[in-house]
Length: 66
Image (cartoon, rainbow, N blue to C red; front, top):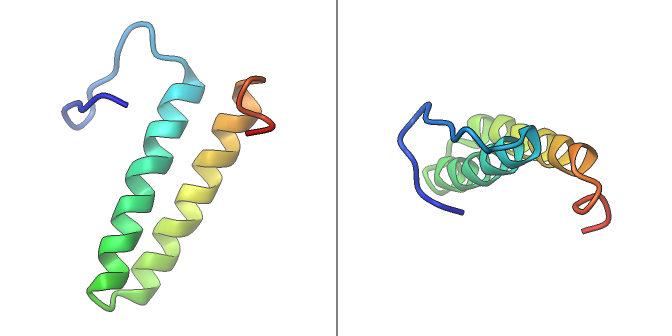
């Protein structure tokens, strides 16, 4: 996935692409939070990652079984 500025969206980006990008970022943030003993924040970010991943899979038939 390509780097992009905060809030930046691409015209050809699908909702599944956006959700997958959010899942990736939330996972990275959850890892940072847990590294710094911010367990509650890490948990919330992990839940956001799971939700975004689920949305991405539901929105894109090719990702449903990945």
